[in-house]
Length: 148
Image 1 (cartoon, rainbow, N blue to C red):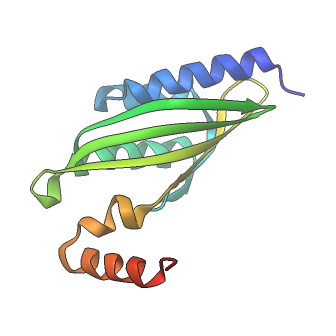
Image 2 (image 1 turned 180 degrees about the vertical axis):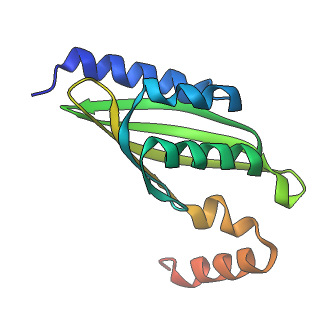
């Protein structure tokens, strides 16, 4: 059984890391995740600190002023769920404002470091609907599939 104090400290450190994340801080990812961390979101599924760093670096290239705000957390053993809101401006879409709400499942090792970061959020609503033709098709499909 993992020490719950270490888990709580790990959650606090991880939340602080993401809420204050800047391109310069990506190097300190080593202090909050394991070397073989598993990171997954709707666009990426990578293993290892180096690959997770690359995902974060790409985020800063694609998104201007990205910001995470964690609104809720729930810890159960060595698993934590974070509810969050992400905001930023998409550079490829003329810096169009973007907001996504989601949940992250975190898993911790015996030292209180994150060994898995698994994101759950609706990429269709949060991103793809903003793309001109694709967005219209997604909204049409949502309306057709909605309960009447």
